[in-house]
Image 1 (cartoon, chains in turn blue, purple):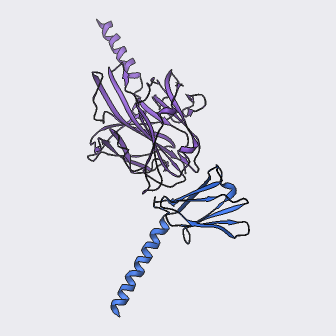
Image 2 (cartoon, helix red, strand yellow):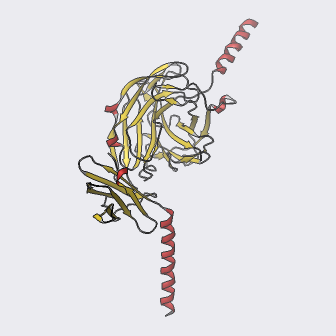
Image 3 (tube, helix red, strand yellow):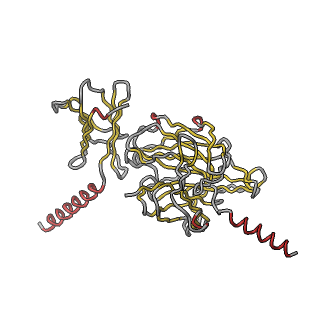
Length: 107
Length: 274
């Protein structure tokens, strides 16, 4: 039992440490219109670490998700440009999410 | 006889009165910390930046390229920029000299990440000293705050490798960089540091007349520092604007066309006020 508690303490400590480390960097995401009907978003973190695997959502004005995916191995996410107004969300977890208004995404 | 001595003394005084400013190869673009990618104008000028003094005429550079990397684990992309070069005439406060400009299209400065502009100029013949000078120069840009390869050597014959992001300096911060020659640290090297005291006028290819600072003494025009035993230099930036660091003769090549060659390494950084 003591061993289990000790292990739990170590795990809790590690979680606390990794949470601190995560707070020290900030998420970054930028999108541009490729001019061919597609939009490319790039992401990463301010310490230079990859955004590969970070969930990406594109929502319409009602908030409904119209495109769903994730950053690829190059920290890029490409999607077909929606016809109407839209918002892109880079979902890097709590405190690490970014919303980009479609009207700010230009060529 | 006395007259002759007086004349010689006078000559000496006149010679010493010429300010001790240094040659500096500039690779200049006004904004290096970019929020978004954009078309980018770059000027290549070989001049004396503190005093906006004598501008030397450059020949067609041997190499001019850009390295781009997105994220620390990203791949480094190399773009040849030599084909974009166009000759211009740059006007300093005392003369005009041949220089170059390049317009970097948005498509190559669009992604987030670090961009290193690298210039390997043609050796310049300095008649007064009967030597050639080649200042291999780096200037950094960043788009969107995502770092890339700013701390990695570009593999040049001689170069500065920064330990502080050269595009993210507040005034008062300490800049630190390591000097390399053929990839190895250069200890005890003479380094000249100069402030770009006259803002470049990008439209008119000239330095603006107004100076931002006044030097109380010639030794403040071109400051002298040395690299330590591991080739590092540290320098606190006292004023917002552009600062150039030039290591003299740090490169491996020492001869060009049968004459002495000073193969120097230059890096430019930009500090902004809080």
